[in-house]
Amino acid sequence: MPLAEQTGLILALGDWVLENVCSQLAKWAERPPLDRLAVAVNVSARQFREADFADKLLAILGATGANPKRLTLELTESLLVHDVDDLIEKVSRLKARGVGFALDDFGTGYSSLSYLKRLPLDQVKIDQSFVRDVLDDSTDAAIARGIVALAHSLELEVIAEGVDSEAQRDFLASAGCDAYQGYFFSQALPVDDFEAFALRG
Image: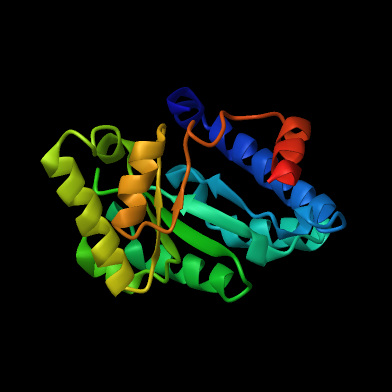
C-alpha cells in the first residue's frame, strides 16, 4: 500500500475496489438474505483528497445500482491534518446520498476531538493495538472503555478491530462495544466462501 500511494497507483486501485464492491452489493441485493450485507472500504487519504472523488463514487453507485446505505467508507486519521473543510464537505455530500463513514484506527494518530465533533461520522473503530492486550494491560482496557464512552456520547457506533478471542469479545461487549472484526469470527475469505459463511449465520 505505501508503494501504491507513492507511485500514484492507489488512485486506479482505489477506483477498481469501489467499482467491484458496489457491483457485489448490487448482486447481493438480489439474493435474500445476502441483501442485508454491508461492506466497509478503506479509502486512502490520497484518493479521498482527489477533487472528483465524490463525483466518481456517485457515478459508480449509479452505474452499478448499489444501495449507498450498504456502503461505509473508512477514513484514516491522517485525513484530518489536511483541508478539513474539504473533507467535511465531501463526507456531508456523500452522507446525504446514504453512504456511511467510519474513522479507522481511532486513537493512534491525529485525531482532534473538535474534528470528531464536526465530522458527520457514523462509526469509530478501536485500533487493534488497544484490543490486542486489552485483557492484560489496564491502560489498553481503560483506553478501549474510554473510546466506547466517548463515541456513544457523540451517538457514534464503535467497532473493535483485531478481536481474536472470545475473552476479548466478551470484555469489549461488557464495555458497550457495538461490533467486532477479527480472526475470532473468521479469517479473510474469497467471496464464494464468505457467502457460504454468511448464509450459515
